[in-house]
Length: 88
Image (cartoon, rainbow, N blue to C red; front, side, top):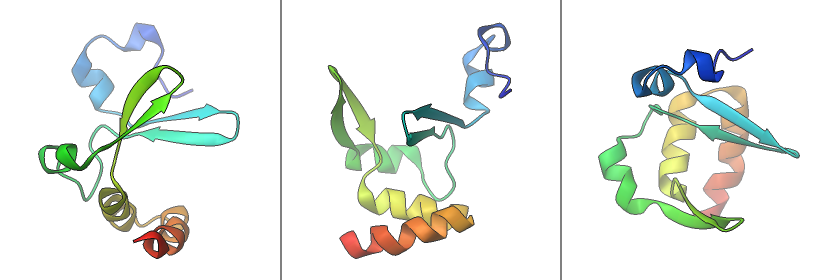
């Protein structure tokens, strides 16, 4: 239980205090309120827009995704970096 049921989401500060991972099919999507290695105001202009169904959704650009993966430093992030850095 992530503790993110509607009863616990009293205000936006409570929501922004937690990172969220959404799982749909086999693709996990991380929603990071305060990602390590990234300053929102600098990253926002570099965002990449993609359509998810009929909705346009902003995603971190490749360079920012690499920064976040380096800063997080988890084994899964290091594995992702091997692939992502080949795309640059």
